[in-house]
Length: 192
Image (cartoon, rainbow, N blue to C red; front, top):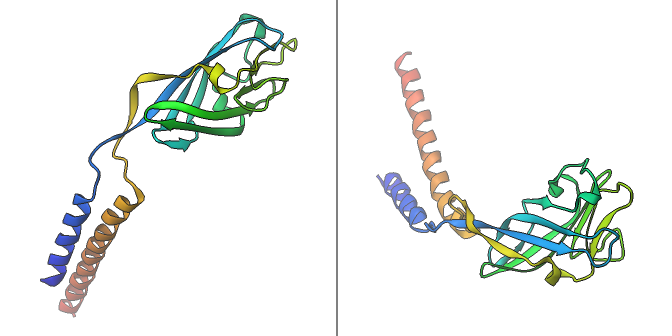
């Protein structure tokens, strides 16, 4: 009787501790124009999967457009698939407030507010004919803008909420396993 009550109470407490609001991964566009490289034009892209009111790594950064003079991107346009050297962004109240990203591949490189392959802190190259779009404007030159709607993350729990739910579930599963073992032992004893 006590075990059944304890499990039921534990599950009720665990379920009450769940934050039923859904969290969302925030996505931002960026762009920078050449003011320090040897190729005129603008690079645009999208930063995916950032957490609001936190510093986190982007889950994906995609280069959306670039000047044709850079050539063909032989390493693809998903910069997070390259060798990532730095990936940290800060979001406060839904706004991208700071951060940096840099990645290199066999024939490509990108930096967003980070030390770069040239004398600038925002840049993109596909290393064909040495063409580079570069910018010295730092984070402000990235022109970050939030994209709506945010990508939903189903049921986001804090560590405390996970613990509050996990312990009662563990106890409940343990009790079920014990009952199964006892029932199996009774069946074995009856067949003797």
